[in-house]
Length: 284
Length: 127
Image (cartoon, each protein chain N blue to C red):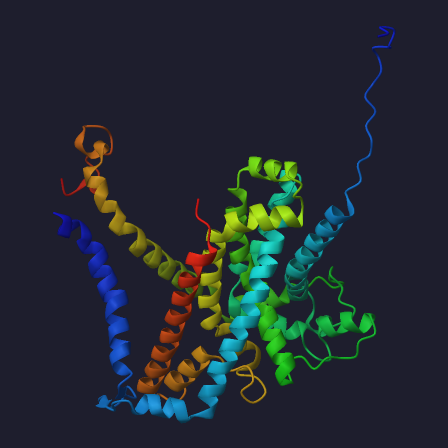
């Protein structure tokens, strides 16, 4: 009877999740271009990946991107969540909550397109605004650093609302009495944050941090649409390597190998976060 | 204790200005909200502008020449209905695929055993 109840989930997951994953893991050890039969290649794909400087740059870019973008995203989200949860009229709180979540409902490709217009060197509004305060035109998308900055900004712009919502929920569930007790002990503002808010929001922060890192490690839409990899390889991300190997060069084995490596990196970082959470997350 | 205090004394309402840190926090939130909504508003106003003045600086948020030709172009050049239907179909399949396995426990819920309305609906099969 139990098997019958589990069957729909198992069959569904099996066909649409497990089978493709297993298939792609196996494909990493083959060479296949969709036209001819797959031929076994052992660890050749992995050796090719290791030797290719573009791939190394892309993975390095992704790691750096994750560190910068996730730090920015989580700090911004935490900052805003604390502020939005403080005392204010309900309609204003609703306005801020909706505003900060709004970018997530937009399509990432569409966002990247109009952001590329805003950051245009000659006609972009951003450079015009900077010009108002006397800063000369910044070559946003045409230099490696500028392009990286724009990709990070657009990614954080779009995704911080997700972390914000998770943290907001966490902060909203902290009982008010704890703040009153803290105030009696003389802790207000930063003290209250450090001793009450931060420990009690740490479970939500773990969730927000894990999801933010996984999403950042898989970044593709923003760098691909904004810069196609940037001047040279400066904004090429790991998933872009997979995409380009698969759909531009029809090297599906190589792409699967790159995807496998990325998957292992993501699993490692996620495991590390859960390991650290034992020390830093406070569960009531 | 004098009881000659006039009863008609209305409590004076003092205008409470926000403390500097509250004001700074509010300012930060407003700046963040502007940074989030600004680009979206710009995109919206650009879509309603004639192409020639799209990139005018300073950007006028309320378009001078209200022009829906861009929207007309989109609907003629792209089969929007088909694309929207495709997205809706994919979304429905994904959502349905994720929800439906949980329908099965409904067969053992109290409502299915009784003769109450809904107990003979497809959700209660198999008995």
